[in-house]
Amino acid sequence: MFHKKKQEDEYEMIKLRTVYGIYQREALTGLLDENHIPYIAQGYSIGGYLTIIAGTSGTFGTDILVGRNTYERAKELMDSINWDELEEESELPEEEWNTGDSPEE
Image (cartoon, rainbow, N blue to C red; front, side, top):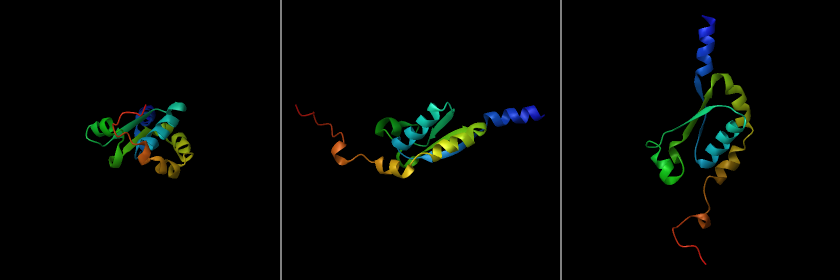
């Protein structure tokens, strides 16, 4: 009986954080990748189409889920990120917008 409960906990996924925008998502998932912590990035845009078209999950957000057995380590890593700085970088300055104009030669 004990063995079954331990096995269920190993595969149970819990929400680590909801991130908004590509900078936040990439910072957190990159850190998890570097530390070999498996995760699921569950977006709430329309089937992921907004992410493909707009390049961001925008106001919908993306939940980052990790296994119960790796949650504490993932939380320590997450807490090392300066989230305020990433929020400032979430918006591209207007001069960096791709307007579709040809590059100047």
